[in-house]
Image (cartoon, rainbow, N blue to C red; front, side):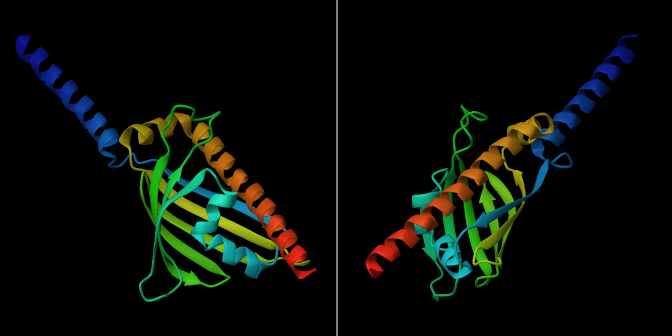
Length: 195
């Protein structure tokens, strides 16, 4: 009997260890997020694209996506590297420190598309598409395909995905509202200088 109990205990411990190893190690049970967000900005495409691809202006209109560091391409090509501290929605993630992500943008079609590889607390790809709208506005489509690096957040994602989505939506809605406000302010400032 003792041998049988030892074998059962060893097998149970092995299964439990393998289960936690998969989750904590992030092997086959990695939770990925594949999210689309669309923005409608009441400003011309060229102006919106210029503002969105200038990280130094971002602090004026998107406070949750704080730019911590920027590195332009040394050859003057579009794109570059931006390190962000992303503050999650307070009502959803009140006690969570900001995510730190590094976004490297090397694939750029000016005024049409940017593709960034994201690393840090989030790992994956962000593709941003730009479209001119009838009437002079701009339609922007973000496509995030990411996972969280922290194994505990990965595990939590299997249970708290609606909370993660709500926080993501909050940050993105703040960005759309902030960019619309900022573009209106820029248009008013330009109109004043022209009169």
